Amino acid sequence: MNNTQINNELNLTYPDGFELMGEEELIRYFRTPADRWGVYNADQHIILSVSWKKAGFKYLFTDAESYMIEVEAVLHRTLLNYQRVTDYKMKVGKKKAYAIRFEYRVKDAALVQLCDLVVFKHKKHFYSVYYVTRKKGASTKLPAFEEVLKSITLN
Image 1 (tube, rainbow, N blue to C red):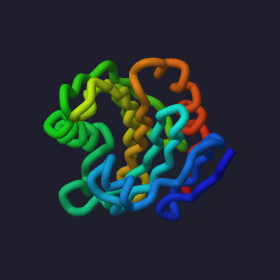
Image 2 (image 1 turned 90 degrees about the vertical axis):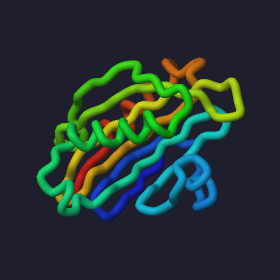
Image 3 (image 1 turned 120 degrees about the vertical axis):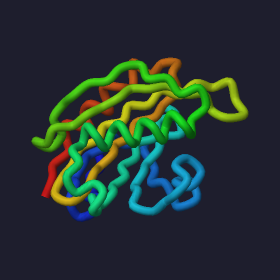
Image 4 (image 1 turned 135 degrees about the vertical axis):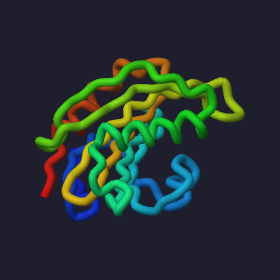
């Protein structure tokens, strides 16, 4: 298991076999490396990423659920064949979190990806935790993501 601290606020543990994503990879998958951390496991086709956004004036009084609505609207516009599978609520690091599971098709491929996205607010930041894998066989990989979420502690 590997431990990391993100944005000096979020601590998490992730499984062995993951490699740190460089700037080029973050741009390739998420369009920007700014305010984002990520790792990937090439053998299992899994990406784990955390992004954070400072709650400026626009988001000062916004809760995580409202922020999730905005994030999902962007995903719906930008991802090919976006389709929400389910949504759920949970606690992450003792904070109320909102989550969606969705699928989308990879551009220029017949490949369908499944993603769980968990959003929560801590201090002055919104955190988005992404777990992306191929749809085929995804159910066997989701318990590892649940363990990552359970490992999160907040400073």
